[in-house]
Length: 464
Image (tube, rainbow, N blue to C red):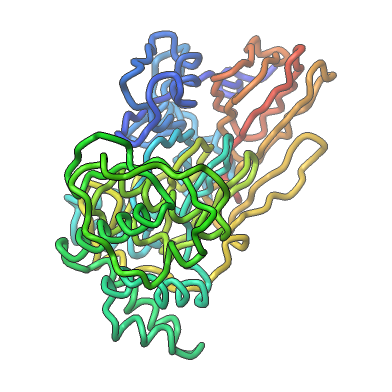
């Protein structure tokens, strides 16, 4: 029998209601919170964006049996962290574990390196309140969309050559310089190009964005919602397609028509397949982002950043200075224990464009290269181990009616989330079901038995 401090402990976890979250019980966060906290009541009109599992002061987890914050308990029981965590990080849990439910796009953003985070905090503590870095891992639990890293140079060049509104945004001279640049100068040309885009004036952004989405609409790729008067900057769209449309309609040389003053002048075309896969994805995406953030420069970022559609179980790792934005879906996310972010688009929040543009890694990568593969731990477990010591995540799938499964003891403290299914533990007397969250001290051996339902769990721990 373990001493009390070496037992698993159930946690009650904090919910963050950011505006971009899914509403009511359509949110995975709300579904989990409903089972995790008996006092939680979901409002169908309210957003539930993130569930935080850890010790960060902006949303600390609480031990259910005592009501004590986990961070305070850890300080009193530092041996539960494990020798390696104590040696590397001191008396603290080095990671923050989350569930995200994304209804609207998050900001175009990046996270600074450790040294840069400390510098930003020192110089502007009112904006950058956290001195820690924030590498992060996102594992899809439903179909999940994101922008991540810069596209291959040839893809960006094609967009610049063929989208007149994009060329206006960055400037003809800068666009031509990128298109004609050799390999040795491409990265510096990309920085100049992206910086010109992100620092364009508001009137230039608004006029070119409305020109592009209106041109797409006029060519039959999309249909405006009928008979609903709107301002030029709050157009919203329903995606349809046109067999007569060429691939160039998204990026072609047609002159932009006069923007409409109402939606009633547009008629829907029959819904059929577009001929070009790129157009199929980017036309709807541009219009969706414009409907969420009308007149925002971040809408044009889709022509610079890779678009990824992850299946459940697929993952992204986002290191320091990597541009990204989550767009839609649900994921489990783990990161260094930080809430540090530099934003530049798709947000009403403060945008620090100069800092973001100067800190980014201007590296060309394919979309497929951004997927982060796990390694197999055992028959039922794969582990995502990013190249940082702060965290790793195990994805555990135990089939129904399995004999006892030994959850592998870890050298560090961990947090276990039950995403789906039911099961029981051995002598600890804890029943596992959807929404159970446990803190497991380092070295703890946990035997799990499933019921008639498969058990799907995620376990976050330090990668030391």
